[in-house]
Image 1: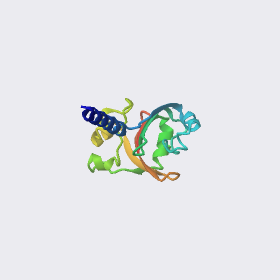
Image 2 (image 1 turned 90 degrees about the vertical axis):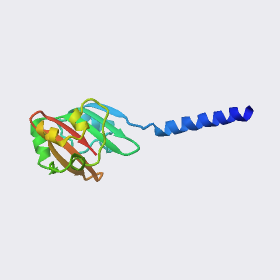
Image 3 (image 1 turned 30 degrees about the horizontal axis):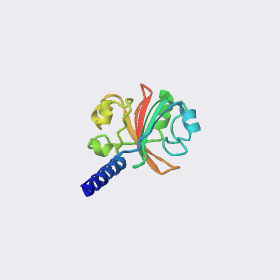
Image 4 (image 1 turned 135 degrees about the vertical axis):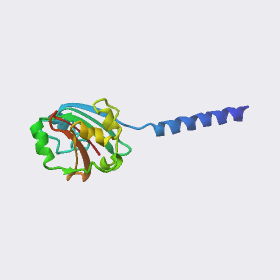
Length: 158
């Protein structure tokens, strides 16, 4: 009976250990603007790219500490998004969604539209988004970016 109790305790401890290993650390941060994100260190830590427009506001950032993948939603002036787009490499949107959108991280915050969460390139383009990519030269991270120049909104992930 005593050995059964010990085995049960060990089994329970193993289950707790496995469950805790499965839990991911995926913090979410909200910033009113680029300056606040920079002051918090989000840019120096690489969670937000240096090329984020100066006019960026309503920034929501989420990243997975285990995989080093992340996603951001933000607003910016259409003019600054046009200037940013000129520095980006267009992504071929005629290839399958999974290839066109690069490595993937699905954030849990609500700012991302459903069609982006589902990697639906056709709906992104239909809704006025340009899909591009850029290498952050400081971190060598390849960022994928969906820009809506008319609405002044963007989503980026790596």
